[in-house]
Image 1 (tube, one colour):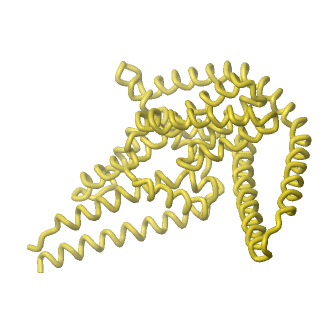
Image 2 (cartoon, rainbow, N blue to C red):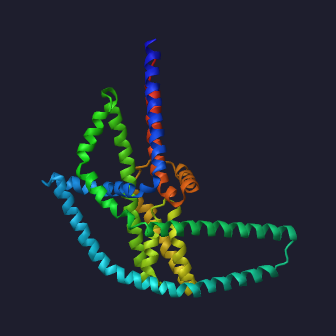
Image 3 (tube, rainbow, N blue to C red):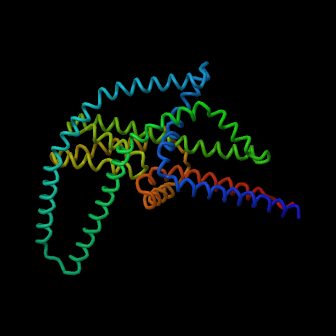
Length: 350
């Protein structure tokens, strides 16, 4: 009876926790429109907290460490903006002039392809199958590119509202120790140690992925900018920024980021396209073989098949944002399932 009572108490607590999490998720979904600044504040906190910890260990108070970091970031950001913004604006203007001619060139290439394709003498059933396959691929590519474009555009158009995020991050980091202690005191004494350990594992997964993926994406963007500049490809900065942004998506991000660079190079000449393709291949090999293993490592601990499934599911449910969040969410689920299996295997009848 003692064993059954203990199991009932354990399952009742689990059901209660699951119910509270469901209520929290439903509440957050209702107010999802106001969540982006808070989510970005969480990302900034993950990025800045190691620097804050180092400065605190060297004698700074948390507020003074934060002020020092913020002033440094603002100064570096102002210098970067002063150097990059005129160049980016100039490239955007040239891009606006370039796009009409580029789309006209694409239409001409498409018309030429259709004309040559129509000259092939194929059986009716085979031609219909090929036509359907071509239309399906075109529709999927246009849908993917359109979704990516809309998502990237929405990020840029929402930047003004997200200016609140650094302020939220400042207060979160300043009172992080107090918040942690307050949360610990809310936990039941019997569950406190196990819950804190579990949250520590989840924090390691999320923080490792966020910091590592953003670092790798920034390095890929810089490498792409250098390669495109050396190859004298137009709009190198804009194309590199796009490649860096999309690189935060594992597996599919590099492919999405490579498409605009290849398209611009192909509009110049096939030789340029081959050169850019070779440069992208080298960069992606460096990322997959050197950068990602050293910087991200095995923080998430997921099999590649699980990662791909999570990415596709995230894209199906929430678009590009879902793809970005899919891997850390799957990593957290992996930690929770591993803890549950471990607790189940260690339960012995008494």
